[in-house]
Every structure is written in C-alpha cells, then in structure tokens.
Image 1 (tube, rainbow, N blue to C red):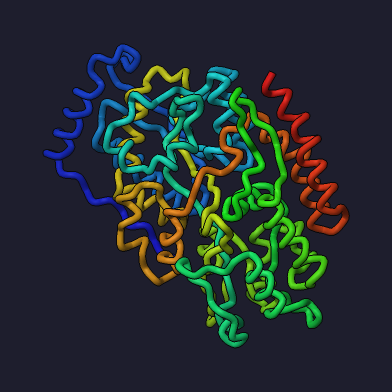
Image 2 (cartoon, rainbow, N blue to C red; image 1 turned 30 degrees about the horizontal axis):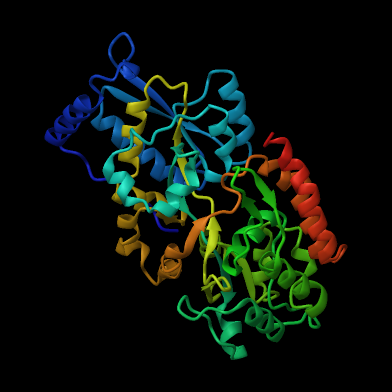
Length: 438
C-alpha cells in the first residue's frame, strides 16, 4: 500500500508571512473575533476512514496549525455510517462543528433547513475558478453555495484482465466504450452461469444511486423540475435502459449472479478473486482494496462503464466541505478550506482516498495519471462526471429508502416486472415528494 508523503517542513520566514497574510484576510470580520486571548478555535469533522486518508487529513491539519498560531483547527473523527443523523442532532443542539465533511447529496435538506452557511461570497477566486461549474452545481441550492466539492468517484468496471484476454472480447476504452447493448452481449459471452462462472456481478445492496447515476449515460433523469420549481418523478424510455439491462442479465441471460444483488461491493471481491465473476461494477476507490487483497499474480484492470446516447456521462455526489451557519468564525473556516484544498493538498487527499479530485490543477498532477493502479483510467473519465440526478431534490432520502430501494431490489430479482417498477417509482414516489414541496 502506498504511503502518503509527509508535507514539506515550512520555514519560519514562510510561517510568519503566511500568518501575517491571514491576519489581514480576517481583519475587519466581526463574526471572526476570537476567544479572550484572541485565538480562534475551529472544529473540523472529517469522515476520512481509510488509514491513508486519515493520515493525509491529519497531516494537513497539523500543517495548518503549525503555520497559523492564531487559528487552531481541532480534528474531529466522524463516520459515514451515521453522519446525517449525527449532524442533524448537532445542528439542533447548537453543537455543530465549524467545518463539516459530507457528501453533496446529503446537503439539500441541511441547506434548505438553514443549518449550513452560504459561503459563495467568502470563497477566494482561486478556488472558485479551479473547480468546474458542473462540480459547483452539486453543492449549490437556490443560487447559494453550501459546500466545496473536492473528491469524486466514477463507477467503473473492474475486470479480470486474464479472463478478458482469453475470451477475445473487445476491450473498451474511454474513446471507444461498450454500449449498454454490447455490454450485455459481452457478459453473456464471458459466462452464463452454467459452470458457476458469470460475466458480471452486480453488488446492488444499495441500488438507487448506482441505477440513477449510470442512467445519465442513456439520457435518463427520473427527476424533472417544472417551471414552478417543483420536482416530479418520471420513468421514461431513457430511464429504463440500465435497470432493464441488469434485470435481463440476471433473469434472462444468466450472465449476472442473482446471489450478489444483496451484496455490497466488498462482498463480491472474494468471488472476483476466485474466478467466479469476470467483472464487477464498483466505485473507483475499490482499487485500494483490490491492491491490498488480491492474490499474488491476479491481473486486473479498470474499464469505463458502458455508454449511451450521452456518452460516458454519469452522476456523482462529490465529497464536500461546508461551514455551519452557527459558526462564529465563517471567514476563518473558509480560509482553512482554501488551504486544505490547494492543488497539491487536493492531490494528497485524492491519493489517500483513491478517488479523483474535482480541481482542474490537481487532476493534471502526474501522480494521478500513472498506469500503476490504473489511475489514468479514472482521470480519463473526470470530464464526463455530472451532478447526480437527486442532488437538489428535497425528500430524496425518503423516496430512496421507502420507495425506490425496495422497488428496484424486487425488479432486479425478477419479483416484479418493468410496469410495476414504473408504477412504484412514479406514483408512490410523487406522493412522497409532494409532502416536501407544499
């Protein structure tokens, strides 16, 4: 496993200059007055969990504290498993951290609820221009910016390279990807389950985001906003392509194992390493687990997800950094975020999480364009990433949990047909969303 390099030591002269510059930046901001001794303390709740990622986060906090004696950042460890409920409790109790690490698809209700600060006017021009507008759209609601998107993860096909080479199938590239129809045909050729081997394993314990985000490639949107600003659910021909492909692979072709439908991505890896599945659709960061866990000599490669009429477009919900509305030190918090997301730092965070940075300068870094561990295969997809369809939909979490998840799980298993899936997603779904749009 690659070790994240430690940051270079800062010279005393640079320390003094940086501290002086920051003092000028923060002067005149009545909301950023410090404690009695003039020192500001910021609490930064991070959701980093992999060792490399935690190390990178903590190293940057230490570097900030070493060069900013008047503004101390306290590192607080959070968890992806409980972050939404934990944040809601802390917001309502007036104990929210100043700087909040989350994902963009979790921000809408907090933003509309008044818990997050609009930081659009506080962001420095460097940071605004470095991150593409399509990424800013993921954290912008009602024209206000409630977070800085900084890490993103495309879904890719991780394949048994030896198996594919022996089969003689065409290997897709970002320039010439498989279509969804070709993908179905290839998986049938690679394995139809008769000998216990399958062309693909779909880990769909959480089926909604995977289905919606991949459907952007076919032109699927599912959520449509009208002139009155209200959102309704539709399930048109473009929305059908991805779920129908999965259903047919499982229930008609036998090229996808039905036993993996209730699995998470990690659960499929033993079977993948054991030669049971030729390919597994996974998030880009799963490469780290593969590097750590694959048996010696196992040859794997990253392939782009199938493309539709919109090419390789797919939805993502980037990781974000936000500032609590109740924080008395908003300018200082944004100054830390700007430091934390300098291009060289964004590269370290991306390497720590095995994900892609949103920043255009960081994406150019040679460390993220190597053939080793297939970094280059991921950075080639960055320009095709778009905001996930559900980004700004109020009520999405309830729609996902109560309507879409059980409906898709039943459809993928063959328990219901496409017509029943459409009925549930649309009729039941619009009933849920209507309560949030009165």
